[in-house]
Amino acid sequence: MNRYILSLSFAFFASALFAAERPNIVVILVDDMGYGDPGCFNPDSKIETPNIDSLARDGMRFTNAHAPGPLCHMSRYGLMTGRYPFRTNVSVWPREPLIEPDQATLASLAKSQGYRSTMIGKWHLGFEELANETYDRPLLGGPVDRGFDHFFGIRASTDIPPYFYINDRKAVHPPTDRIEA
Image (cartoon, rainbow, N blue to C red; front, top):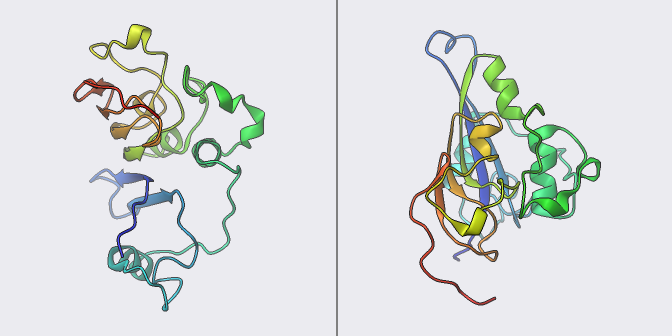
């Protein structure tokens, strides 16, 4: 069975100096995935998830988690900041960042403890507005401006244009066409 899952994955890597003292940390936030979907939580799952099962077997599993909001961008905001999404105007994400420049995030906290971090996947927490949709300028206000050392991913869900990949602050290739909703 094929199943497409949008995810936000980020990893905190201890520097070589601290590697023995601090473990590497991988956080995976998945949209539209049920608790019983991966085999590590449900041996009767119809979806094969050997890599997730391996991470669960060899690492830590957290079994009592709750989403801070009913939509993915609200849950991402809560995970990244530790704040309830009702404490900010989550509707502004298409035009501006939800996370303030000086606001603490998981990534900035990890950095303060000597970790390097990478985020891969869907950000969906806003960038500064794309003036006239020009993609040759840096995209500010995203993951690398909110504590991550590196980012590769997309700005929002795959049902929200424009569609393009971002590497750190730059569009890999600007969008070349529009797809109607």
